[in-house]
Image (cartoon, rainbow over all chains, first blue to last red; front, side, top):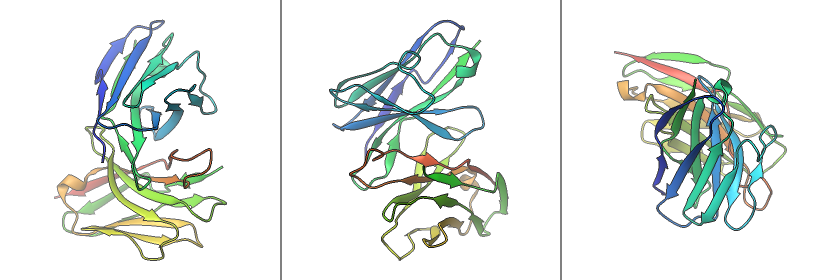
Length: 113
Length: 118
């Protein structure tokens, strides 16, 4: 299994600003994933972050809004840019285990006012 | 594209009783993996149980078991001897095997809120 930490655990931000969320894994992994969970909803994949290459974004998500960095095999950041109240969500990072299950970080609860 | 459907937005069960949560999915793949995740109010996603599509035997983890019907594309979760700590949102999820562009990506159902009454 993998132990994943995220910072911050929660934040309240003003519209128009940006927030960078950090994800740290206790072991080296090739792929990291970022998900969004809007209030009362399920999880939706934002993008896949591979070390040494550009992140791959899912339909409906763009790099200008959600830039991702992956500087090494244990760390990634997701930035939520030019925030609006519609960006209020829980953001979670995850990694794939040896038997295809995914391990998730504790999530970052973002509120945009 | 793969889809996962949970048709029960909410379910409730008495403590010590048994409850079954439903999940159906759609895929053209023959090999894939299915999961049930639990999300308590702490919002931490916790893996409950996993099932490989190539295995006919239903997975079991203590009080949790699945009824996997591959032909019907059905994957239900049975919780036996329900406990107060089982109260949470439960998500069914699908992922394809390695080798494709979607490797590692989870597709989630809408979730089922489980309430456990003492």
